[in-house]
Image (cartoon, rainbow, N blue to C red; front, side):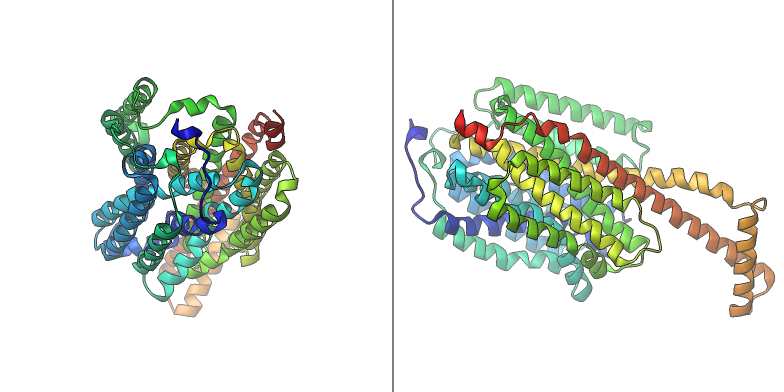
Amino acid sequence: MAQQIPWKPSHNPWLTCIPLMVAAFMFVLDETIANVALPYMAGSFSVSRQESTWVLTSYLIASGIAIPSVDFFSKFMGRKNFFIAGIILFTVSSLLCGLANSLPMMVLTRILQGFGGGVLLPLAQAINLELFPVEKRAQSMALFGLVVVIAPIIGPVLGGWITTNWSWPFIYFINIPIGILAVYLAREYIEDPPYARKQKNVKIDSLGFFALIGWLSCMQIVLDKGNDADWFGSSWVCWMTLFAVVFALWFFYIQATKKDSLIDLKVFKDANFSLGTLVQIVMQGVLLASLAILPQFLQGLMGYDAYLSGLAMMPRGIGALSTVIFIGTIGSKIDNKILVTIGLILLSFAGFMLCELNLQISTLNIAIPNFIMGVGMAMSMIPIITLSTITLKNEQMTNASGVQNLLKNLGGAIGTSIVTTLISRRAQAHQSFLVDNLNNMNDNFLERLQTYTGAFMNSHSLDYNSANYLAQNTLYNQMLQQANMGAFRDTFEICALACLVIIPLIFFIKGIKKQKNS
């Protein structure tokens, strides 16, 4: 059988990794590079800040739809050809994103970008794992960690700098030269092993693909618009949720019963893969959620511009980079399960540190927890990818990587939508509590009101009534700021708790040493 043929790459494996890293970096970077530019896009398209989040989630959902087709198209076109086709589609759609002049056009081009880019990460991960023997995968995955961990972290920094100094379309235009370079390098260095070459009589699971589109599309609409429509208080949200559930059940039924299915669900029989994937889903949700709400906090409450908010998050990238170097050098001498556990504890600790934020903080109060979060994310994400795949055969890697990245994308989309809703709802709850203090029976309120009234009368030469009106308005706005601040603290706390909850799962995963000796 083809999968039994011994195969080794003709090029140096580390050289082959270059186009893989370039393409995957480009895709993952675009998951977060638009975060700090959303207010500018919302202004350009004359839409609300919440509506502009479609720019983020449409990309994640579209890539989620494309990911399960990776195994089929790799057999239909040959894996190398399909990888290059994905780069080309991603690069062309990036150009179209930069030229978009309305929100519908932007969402459509982001969907195309997601389709093209969605295949890059699972293919890069699968090829990278196949290039190296099991004992060297820790080092190769440390390199891969430069993509999956650092790219989404530096995205807001780069996006903020480009948006502030040029304009937001250039966050997409920069993909064009990178994409051209990735295509050239892929043609030169990537090659297909026998089991990944073009095959004859390959059938596509059209019903499964239709069910997948229905499931993810309905789910995206619910996640993006549910909060505006009061969730299940709206009949159309209930119906759309029902459609999403029905399509999802139909999709998994087809995958479990049909011979030529989009994905092979048998991979979930591997305990390492199932548990490791579950851990990564939660981590991806926390990662993308935190990267989505921190710029909102810094720009909305602290008055930072796009560049400064991205710069304040740079320590996360520094922490991740230093940890990747550590794992690549001596990480192989430490049990991966210990690394993942420590990383999750650090993530949780950083989340609890962010719970202590207030409106008088300095940039250092943002930098320290971000650095710790970067260390924790790199220390946990890289080893968990290795742990989740060490018990799989090379022939299973393409399918397994596709399934894993599909579920991680869903985790990221759901996490982003959940925190957006949490901030909105918790802000309302805090506002309801705090507004009771703004009354004439509260001595502190009356004292502050008189102080502000006198200040406005002196500084603006206003009469008492006008100054008193401005003073009340100022105090009300301060109350709204505190309510929003409380909502952000609550959301960071939930992210911290989510990291703690998944720690016990790590102890049920087989380590590399155990697998090698079995």
